[in-house]
Image (cartoon, rainbow, N blue to C red; front, top):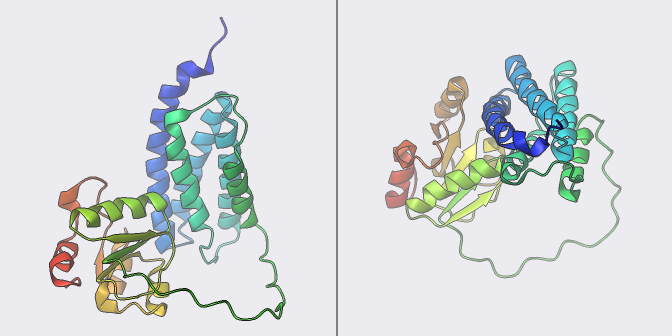
Amino acid sequence: MTLDPHDFLPLFAQETASQLGALEAALHALEDHPDDAEALRSAFQAAHSIKGGAAMLELHALHALMGAFEDLLHHLRDQPGGTGAWLPDAFTARDLILAQLADLRPGAPIPPEVAQLILNLRGHTRPAAAPPADSGAGPTPLPGPPQAPPAAAVMDVSALTADSNGEHLRALGFTVQVATGVVPFTGQRLGVVSARLAPGALDAGWPAAHLSVLSESAPVRAAWAARGLHVTARPVRAARDTVPDAWRAASLQGRPE
């Protein structure tokens, strides 16, 4: 009797969702400590498990994506001391796989967005290219009149995590700008920012009193708290009772206390 890969898709989706939870935890740990050997090992084990199941079920896109992810993690293990510039693409890979679990198609070709992400991941294992020479072009045109600033901004390298925190803030009555990088301060009442992006937020003009720094690492939270910033672990998705009191206060008072 010939086995039909479709028969195993529900089990694969369930197991992969579990592995993605472990992968997310490892990536957040690496966000705080890029050379964390245990987090690199956990991320590799999750990627390897997903790749093996994808190969058996002929899920070509997931197999190729996790292969590139494994290669990147090998590179990071063998060459520590990186800047963590690879993390946004890693979170994008995690988010993309989670989104695809509802529509797994054995034998389907690799879509263009996955092919590009594979190239991005492999690009982090190569030396950075030299910046292009000045083209002599004139200054970038100034933008038009600015829009009214949103009441809050969420800045996190994981799009899904940023969206989740954005929903928490909207439930508190904020209008929210969600980004996977740093956005400039233009008067927002609250900036929820991952620890990795927090230095850039300060450089972009965010007042410390308007920021709430996210980290799963107690030492990292302590370090930011010592600098006078509000700190918190990431709230649980769809669990409003895990939202920090400081965010609730900011919705009423204009900034975290």
